[in-house]
Image (tube, rainbow, N blue to C red; front, side, top):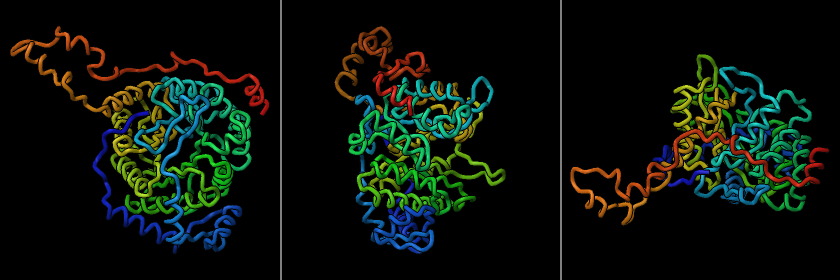
Length: 444
């Protein structure tokens, strides 16, 4: 977690934000959004919102009222209360990559395994900057699809006691995760508190598919926080202009937020994105450029416009190796995320090849970036001691300060934290997990 003390100049003016909102409202009122799920459609109908076939049309009045009622912040609890985190205040909560299939290691690319998954959970548990663990940090292809979500969630519970990102998608898989969570936390505790954060995405343009909606419904019924996001590729699944992308994305996210609130008004919503521009020559996603950084900045502003927490993919790069390109693109996107006041920054460590890979080598290098950014966010301490007026007088003109007590007493903190690799796995300590609970989780 990094404290946000310094912010960038806004990319969007108040008039810009109003115009994006106005056109998003018109999209939802007139064009509507596809909701490919009978249960979700029924929720809209039961609340007096217009539906026709699979499309839902949300009026301005209902939209603005519902969005205004969603909580501005909330506490995400962890198995260890010392790792509870507040989302929506002045801190940027950091999380791991989510969904990549590949491991990059020793100049090789391969599919991830369950051994990799456990290693990553341990690494992120040990990393002092990472607040969230779990989720699909890597897809372990050596485990069958039917059990993969349960094995991943079990590993996150066993090897870390930090706040959790949920695994799995669809009704059956999410119910499995909720049942495991009931064993660990208790059903009443789970229903009355926030323990599992889950990202759920629209199917751009202007649509939500059945699986995503089943995931959303089951989590919302248990009041678990949902980061609702779009992953628009500008010029392919959305307009090529950033203003158009932001408008379509806004309509998609707001529609999802309305559904969540109608199911359960106690469910927190995080305004999220993994949208980016497209290389129109190849059709590939690109994240390592100023355009993507602009999307990050704009999303933080739009989320603030609605008084909602925000989530973006921060430490991403187009690079396929831990080279200079990986370094400057990751720094650009992480710096923009922090300075824009983003509340949750996923992909904060180890992300490589857009959203496709995790690199063990880059995880170590990214720690240096996180240390540097944390140091930059710390305010300059200005008081009688740090002004050093008497020290300057004592040393005098033409001399140096190297051996003066004022210098020697502050050597360790002269540049903030040491800008070097943390090697978190070297310090891994397995958190406690009750034996009886552990046995029940294994049985599932």
